[in-house]
Amino acid sequence: MQFSIEFYETVSGQCPVRDFLDNLKASDPDDFASVIAGLTKLKNRQYHRPPLSKPLGDDLFELRHVGKLNTRVLYFFMKGRRIIAVHGIRHKGMEIPARDRETALHRKKDWLLRHPK
Image (cartoon, rainbow, N blue to C red; front, side):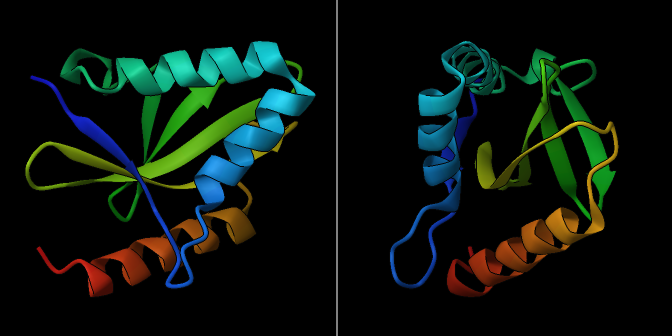
């Protein structure tokens, strides 16, 4: 089963996950390559579980990459085998900071309001 991966865009056309990945590519090319490989793996359902992916609750999931800094891409699923990536973060801890979780939930809600199908 192949899934497609889409990036959340704001009303003004900004793409926070793409910006996050561009910054990651410039600052840490090795971690960037690992995250891109992880996103590619997510297209296959067999990778929708730990250690690559983990549910966070509220129908949010995280793509996980452990490196010097833990890198996460937060996403949710939509009908039609679609994955919508809404937020990217890097941090030292294992837990997702509440602020980042709220950002992801806000973007998910915004996306669902503008894409009702």
